[in-house]
Length: 247
Image (tube, rainbow, N blue to C red; front, top):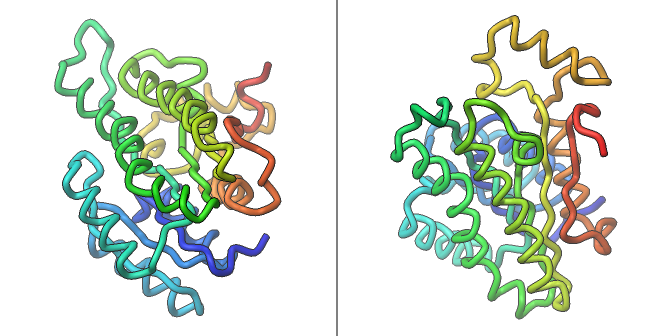
């Protein structure tokens, strides 16, 4: 699956799933615009990619800030000439039972996980339409499909991301632009490292493959959806959850 000549922008690229996606896409030949809040981690990743013979550049971005999104995408396009592949990965949690959830925690999660994806798509869609080629990949979650107690905000944002995926797929499909989502289950990341051992064991009991996923498991799915091999797939939610959700 060669992505030679393609330019990909990955949000939340400094760690976890975003970092794995950036490395996988770079290994497939894409030039990578790395976007996240942590400058130091971005620089380290950019160096790792370039030392390995790839092309990458770091762009500090807080996706909760609309003006930063506009300026970063403008800078990335100015440096690389285009963005062919957009991976909307940046996301946060602010867990709390709904009866105690503060409005600020609802708004912050929805803005970071869902509104930012809409804003990022807006920044790339015109050039994708003109070149009649594009790949938009949104990182959703199993909890946007089945819900999760204490995560009304997070589950809503990820369910919304799935709806956004399908709407965009219908809008731009005629121009050879695909829009798909990847819905990870329990993945070994900083976000899940805070799980208690009891929660971890409970999760494992519900996963037919008997293990938590890795960021690379998700990155492999993203790289496939970004490739020519996936050119007839759009509006799809690719589950990467070890069989935890079926049906």
